[in-house]
Length: 243
Ligand code: GLN
Image (cartoon, rainbow, N blue to C red; front, side, top):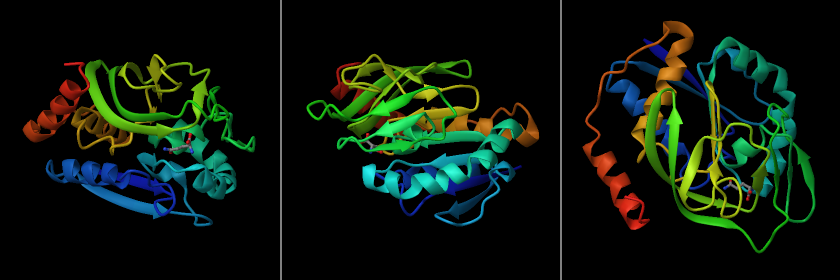
């Protein structure tokens, strides 16, 4: 088996080690004998998104978002084609924001998002930056689990139709909010850096399973030894007082 990952704006959208997510996906595939091809694409470079099983976009500060958004918007048709073809999506923070209607920064500058989802993000409340460790509880693809990460965003995302998770500790989509991220059967959008996947291998496996689905249908992944990963997550859950 093989998955092909499209890693968008790897050189610009990579906050708090988001690239670690790619390393985790690659390692977990390789341990199971699943070939994992990774293609990086940045500004002006051609990509037919629908040729890939997973579309990955990391986080970026307002500056990087402003640099990439026009290039990203030009790819909207290709992204929609990918969605229609069953490609899975993993979007972190600034990347997640850009799939919504718009992003309004602290200086009142508004940049358009892809408008694929109804949510929108406004960063106008300077006194309430969402920053720190975060713990959430999610239910995804029939699995219920707790996950941990780190968030740092001025943007508050509203009008999220189906959130990724319930916040146990931290902020999530809005300052001291109840919900975190966006998720549906194909897309996971989240504010969780850390990076997300090393301490939350169950999310990595959900993403791999979703990516395999396009060509291989419902695949049951071989279990891996996640003792260390789980211990790392449990330490953080305990520190945050939610375990
Ligand atoms: N620039 C966005 C914000 O502050 C995204 C930041 C991020 O990707 N961590 O809301």
